[in-house]
Amino acid sequence: MEDRKFSKERPCSKIEIWNAFYGTGSVKLADGSRSTDLSRARSIIGRHVPRVMCTEGRAEYATVDGEDHICLTMRGEVWLRVGLERYIENNPDRKHEVENPPFRTTRRKKVKTISRRSSNA
Image (tube, rainbow, N blue to C red):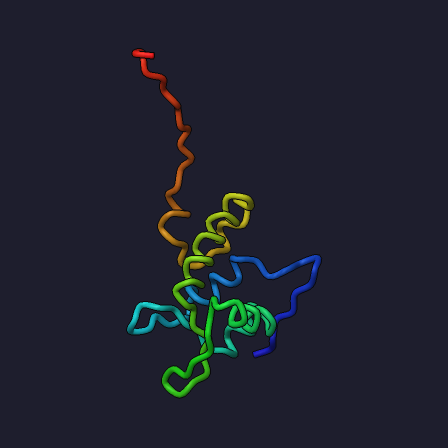
């Protein structure tokens, strides 16, 4: 597989990162964390994104069943889930591109909050 390339005009989005770790072909490990084969990850999110994620503590390299993988850390899972939800809110036209979306992004509705004053004031 060939490494995917991104640019300043078209950077890697949270959707591509989500699809790399939660899409078809990703692996759920025994401890509940997510990983993907390194060559597959590079074909989806490029060569630099995995390196930066590891540097920032969001992922780590590992060997799973004899293959090189990149695994999300707990911190990375939270970062990715929150970031994807925010990205979908800001780019609803791209929602259909998300493979295996998290529950909240598929059923989330905006709720208007109303502040009420007490009549005892």
